[in-house]
Image (cartoon, helix red, strand yellow):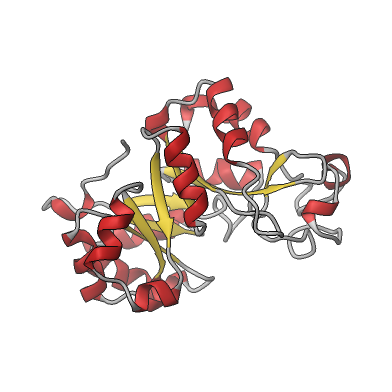
Length: 252
């Protein structure tokens, strides 16, 4: 398992997870974004998955292509060919998961987010695992995360050796207790929580139950990073890994 030792060592060093690549400086979820992230020393590149009308898995956060490309429409209603015709900025195209795995192979570590389709069905778990196996990506170089408890449970059932992280929404965090954390430990090594709702007591509670905590942002990285480093969270999603590296250096 890809367990970190961040908060348990005197030498605190959280995982640096490039959020959609180095998305603050390059178009998100593109090869230029992932390349920049690796150049900036990220430990993992994060990939959000969506499924096209013809069943291909692509790197895309939103359910539509409107925000990140020059096109419009729901990903689930567009074919891969239609999506490939779109420009994401700087002449970059939307990559498929297959293309990403072919390009980087076992040279990088992947942090992949699965999600249910627009009807709340699980549609990508087996496909993701099949692609990882097909391109011989070592299991200890992959973390899979999801807000969907069904997705995490299914991934765990398909392969109990997978490293999984359960993303939590604010309502889950507000009522988080030891029983919930024990249940999560049955399938996952940690939880992912928005930095803006994290308090030190929550971090302590989670880590006390031998779970890691990975903090993510909503475009407000510079507002919360110092606090996350102070709390010694185990992993940090960064839109700008070079900025995070600089902050970590200052803290030393």
